[in-house]
Amino acid sequence: MKVASKFSDSKENYTAATPGSVHVTMNIIRNLTVVTATNLCRTFSVSAANSATHSCKLLVIGGGSGGCTVANKFARRFKAKDSVIVIEPCKDHYYQPLFTLIGGGVTGIEESCRQQKDLMDPRTMWIQDYASGIDPVKCRVETREGHVINYEYIVIAAGVEMSYDEVPGMYDALKDPHSAVSTIYTPDGCQKTWSDLQKFKGGEAIFTYPQSAIKCPGAPQKIAYLSDTYLTQKGLRSKSNITYVTCLPVLFGVKKYADELQKVAQRKNIIINRQQVLKEIRHDTKEVVFKCCENEKETLRRYDMLHVVPHQHPPEFVRSQKELTDSHGYLTVDKYTLQHTKHKNMYGIGDCTNTPNSKTAAAIAKQCYVLEKNLLSTMDKCRPMAKYDGYGACPLVTSYNTCILAEFVYGGVPHETMPFNQAKESIVAYYMKRHLFPFLYWQFMLKGYYHGPEFIRSIVNPLGW
Ligand code: UQ1
Image 1 (cartoon, helix red, strand yellow):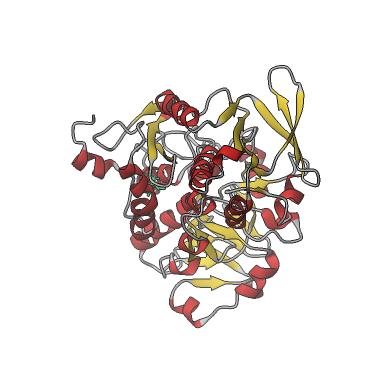
Image 2 (cartoon, helix red, strand yellow):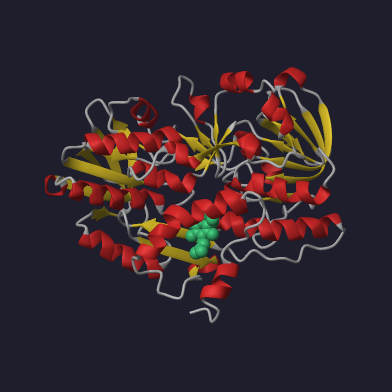
């Protein structure tokens, strides 16, 4: 997943993409695209200075979790240098599932970040730029800095961007270091959450869930649970009210886990306000406006700490391509094969597609496997036969050593790996989230060797309990 980096002057700097890395500003990118010796011996990176026309067998747009994994898989298969081109503007790649833990002070941002150049197979050509347009008929993509890439096959792994315009006041509140308003959805934001939490000395702490499809939909409540544990440890919990305000009627989309989360919130004395939409942030007076979904009534509330989630949508170059997308701007792919509904040589993966799964890194692990098989079939002029079952997983941390490990497939049907009831809070699940999953991600998944937990399930839970 790609995310925006620094809160700097222009709103454009907030642009983001898929699980993995950070979009830095165009200015920063220009400075960074100097091809260093290390760059040369790893991945070939081309910059604006030598913009040109390129041709490749496979073009991957996006170097986040999905893009990086797919590119590495195919670079290894094709062997010939530059058969795979990756368009990715950011030099840093973030493991975003750690952002909630960073917000809760468990670890620092450094642990979630690696350099993109160190993650890509040296046989790929990395164009460090933003894609600006796709011509699916001529099989050609252009970049903002003027590269033109002709492809035979294309994988769109462009992720989603943070959008700050839907809620008046959100952009300014997040930018102001003294506002006590933060989001764990960006690298800077999650560090601010931790600093806000440490500064909070009691009062009203409000955590919100937005009226928009978002990646990792469990994250907005995880940070509320971690904050509760932190404030309890600091002896501040009795002086604080924690409220979780969601526009949804339920705490989680899968009933088995929603029921347990309800108990967790109750035990922690977290007040749940459902079907309330965050309408405005007035950070100068530390007030927020919520609107009730049922009767449209607006309520003004004061806060001492506020956690928000920006609206999210695929980047403009995807959204604007109406014949490639649905009415919300998501790439239209077959939800089982991941092949584009109109163009057979186009596949999509991750957050930017319209597949109705929970958008998490674990989902991408499974999708990569299906995409690889199906794209190979397409290259052999055969029909894609592998099917993505909608697998997604969400480790819902409920304290500094407990977690509910939700795993499910299309239709919200639980599909668990471990031989115990994963809806119950467990210490094992917490340590998997904290240590095992990042290890699997960096060491196996991005290299194209991890396809989700099926093999772990076959060992630890062969009877599928
Ligand atoms: C997973 O495979 C994975 O990928 C590395 C994650 O990373 C973000 C996860 O959060 C989860 C839950 C899984 C699923 C794996 C197991 C062993 C349950």
